[in-house]
Image 1 (spheres, rainbow, N blue to C red):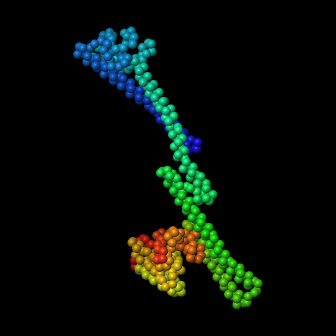
Image 2 (image 1 turned 135 degrees about the horizontal axis):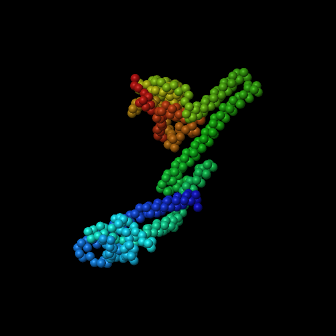
Image 3 (image 1 turned 180 degrees about the vertical axis):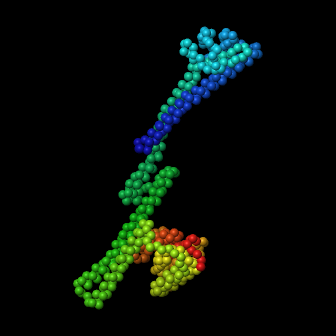
Length: 443
């Protein structure tokens, strides 16, 4: 038996025991009072019935009192007269009883220890007193207690196997998820984790499935990232080593030494740029914002400056860069947003075919300003759209580590700008970010 089923047993037994104890307690306090009050009321009704019969002159001795074990007497001028019913041999005790202190209703115990309930009705004919043995009340309450205890054991008898069955049914998916979590911790992401229980456990399994898929994807991307890092570092390092060995061995002349030295410096700068990108991305994702200086600046100047900077690169591929911007000022860090837009335009040129065009625009969009870069190249596969912003993603046709868009993503998040990408295969791609109304003003 698993631990959850054992807990269900314990909680059920505890709950039903408490319920039974409370029921017994309430029965002894309230039920007995209610039952005895009902007996007093019935005695009163019988006394009134006798009084009405005596008043009408048609009372018959030994008439039915309406209750088993009920007897009636008439007390007048100290004389005790039986009015019928079952007096159960108590008349001798009643004849010597002091009735002066008798209340309207109460209990009376004879010298033999028998206890009776009585009700006293004062009339012009004398006091009509009805008595009933209290043993019937006690018997009734004892039956109630026996029934409650029987219910307790019957509930246990019926419920324990049901708890065992439902406990196993309840714990089976949980144990499945537990085993699956151990497998996931070992790196086995193909384990079956979905359960069908139509409750919160099924929702939990779906959440764990999503988490597993995300971890699996990140692991794959991380492995690719490490492979890309190794490749991108290995190539310049190999060039640096080969050129350095050639210079050291003295197999090249002075003019070639200068050429090799420039290539070494170029590869070192390339490595340094890669390292700086990795460090900067790490800082952004760690929540640290360094040298972020926000102020109002012209978005038109940003668009034209960025577009102009890449005109030469575009002309080398016979690509036309078209720029348009509304005359507005936006609030942000010019240097970082320049880097974002530069990256968008550079990628658009890189993935466009010769003779195509790239559009760079800043236009009003709802209550904000949308800055976009649109190309008409081959587009991005739908399967890759969600991954382009991750630090591990590297497009199959691109070079480098794929850190550019990841850094852009962190910059835009820091600014609080909405951003995204839309692409249709063979029709083009659009990267954009939206400056909210609170961060811009028209000139």
